[in-house]
Length: 224
Image (cartoon, rainbow, N blue to C red):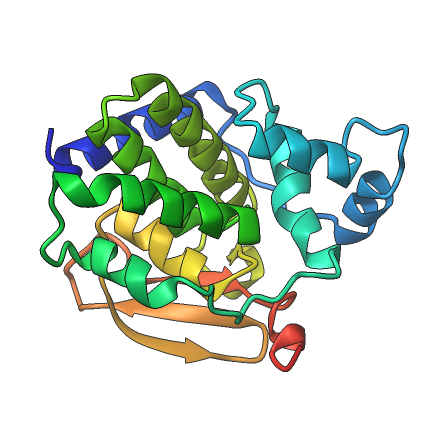
């Protein structure tokens, strides 16, 4: 199975998840999320949710994924513009530069370390699922994909992206590109209005002219 085919399968899984949900969206209530993730008696207590994610728990609920994703903005180590220590080497895998079977063990190590450093690195999580598939560890590929779907679903549940007021809430600009890549959407230009990023598409190429992403929670951390 090629990488492109693998991602098509991933998208079919995501489509099935979305079909099972009500076609509604709701912007995150950050005050409520902060309260819940700091309550040790809550199912949303952040350290416990993070432990489940790192253990590739496939029973995390939709609400728990929302608290995991948006709750990351309240963590002391939240740094949306930080580049991982292995970014350059990982980029070679993303680009597929002379990657052979003998490189797969190194790739697994790199991407596992990346998720230890940043458990919500969606691009790394998505690629790690593919690496598991290439090494025929389908059980881990499925578990990793389910968690990727869940976190991406949290973004998709936060808006419709058609205007700034209903933009998709993201905690990293890179997640805008993860979402667009999954739906095979290519941005022609990006702009920022103080609250939302707008990813403009080529005229008449898609059914919509572009997508709005609410980035209000991350631009305040630009210099952290």
